[in-house]
Figure 1 (tube, protein in one colour):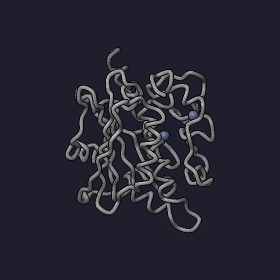
Figure 2 (figure 1 turned 30 degrees about the horizontal axis):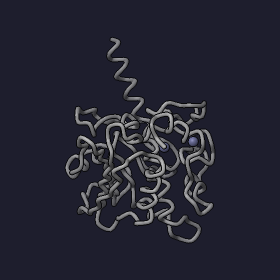
Figure 3 (figure 1 turned 135 degrees about the vertical axis):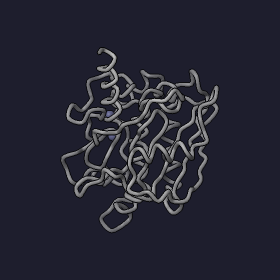
Length: 258
Ligand SMILES: [Zn+2]
Ligand SMILES: [Zn+2]
């Protein structure tokens, strides 16, 4: 009986790792696999932040043809990682396109299958590998009032709903596309780094009780607003991607990060 209860707790824990424009869906089932790259979101935070085990990081960026993320956003992502993690042998990005899987809107299960069918980089003895997929379609969980821009769904995997980002950027009164991409990519990776209280322990009380696994500080990258229609568009309206606040950075430092 005890075992059943703890498994349910893990399920709930995983569910809060996903993100949307306006809310976090509460069902995000991911099968835990013995493969070291198929664990729960946040569980590799120390391996990513410190150089204790892994001296370098490789990021495998795969996108559906026509939905390549901007090079500005990828550069910003690498700069974010360089600023927060210890990887003395470097952080590299390998990028390629795949044809459309043709299954949009994407369920979580489909996103997992696409990773399993296409991922080529897994952890080696001293290099940790990350998978990032950019879709040509929306999430199956989108509704009329809420759209999902990205989800961190495993310990080293995240998806960005790039077509949805296209529909929300680069038109009059919409944010710049690379800015929106940068914000969503770094926010999702913040979850993979264990924020907020998702595998990286809190050093101060700054988890948002109403939006678990997010930061309470409104200007922080890990803040999530579910009540305003503007959502992320408001957060990037200043022309710069939101940064981690001091409390989130303190958490990362206490868990081996910079
Ligand atoms: Zn989030
Ligand atoms: Zn924060």
